[in-house]
Image 1 (cartoon, rainbow, N blue to C red):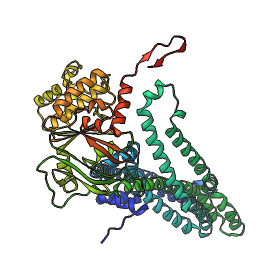
Image 2 (cartoon, rainbow, N blue to C red):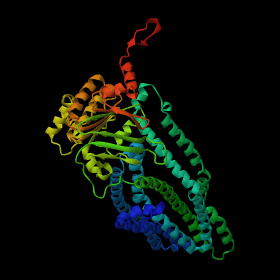
Image 3 (cartoon, one colour):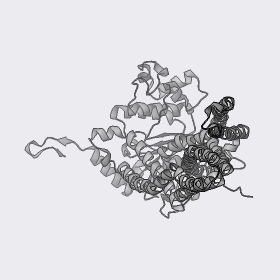
Image 4 (cartoon, rainbow, N blue to C red):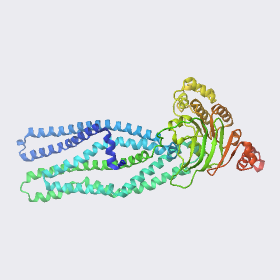
Length: 604
């Protein structure tokens, strides 16, 4: 039977219920605290009654009784503070435990979904869910949940007090409460407002994601003296957020104005009723005590209703945040085989592979791609930008699952292998290198956590990076990114190669690994590649055709299809697409900038 997915308040309660003992204790103590908060008002009523009973002969005033009621009011205040403090202590214990479980669970789930999801989702959105949405759940359990109990208990106790002393004055006050509830329901309960809140969260996520991307590229923006307006995506998301949030904010104007006016002027509902009753009563002293008490008590109604407003407002935002989190958690993990298989050899075979990044779209990134990358050979994938080269690289380690066809490693479909096993057998060095803010040693050891210090140093030497590591302030123990320690693009690339070397996987995928390297770094990287690729099945994606001319096989990919394949010499002899690309490459390699005198510089 399929499990029902909860949403809204039931979902928030479900999250809170994971720490039931702490939550129940918190709710019980919060309810008692709410009850205690009304004790001072009851004591004030009895004090007023004693004073009016003695009027005008105050010598007859029962001072002991007045003092006892005063101590009762003080006890109510102290009880409210202590009970609420204990309620928050219990709710925080539950909140911190839930926060830990949610963050670990969310991170664990993200590790199970296809790795390609992270390439498409954007780190800004995931960061917002992890840092903001889940943190709001902690705030809900720690603060809002006890306040919800207070917001439920307080109106009931308040209504009981209002109707007990004088039901006529009580009904007048409750009329104001009913009107304020009606305004809140119109403000928060309409489908339009809920949809606007969801749109608000979506626009906020888009702006967050674009901001992260903008900050990462801030050096380029500053170098070209650009502003945020030139970064179209960020500018567009800010405008979209602004265009949405201003009308959204203004849509609350009338509702909130009406609510604030009502809850802060409840006495205006009580006053005319009290005057009318006072004109016809015979027990002026008794009625005066009640009337004065209602005028003193009605400001407490504002406090209660503002707490209700606070709970509803925060609850609505938290519910939408949880819905976004649940949306990510609903993404299916990468399917795992019931009986995982292992490869006996390391040939890579693409068999009529069809793949699309958007399942709802008919536009394919790869369409019927077939080729064989043999063990202990270098297979180069070349072609124009957008042709599908990087897509092939991402499919080998199963960042995505193909739409149709299959990819096999050693004759075994990679979908029949456990993900952990496949990751162990494939090393990849991509164009964008990510290094953790840890020591150089630990960054290299990411390739093989069990590697010894000697193996790490040996891998660094093989990757041509031992020399620059040795010059760092603390050598291999230098923390990357700390105290002004920054590495060049080529140095980062060589560290990534060292990471792959220490892993020593039988399959190596290189995706544009030398695209941004200068000539000196490229020479060193090529020397590192020679060691990394030894006795490995290598798939190399490259734009620079000169770097792949020695490959055992070159595959030309264009428009998501294999256009031709063969060795460098064989492809040149066919006078096909590769020959055209090679001629263009050679022309570009021979370009030089010549002085032009009055005519200016020119390419020759």
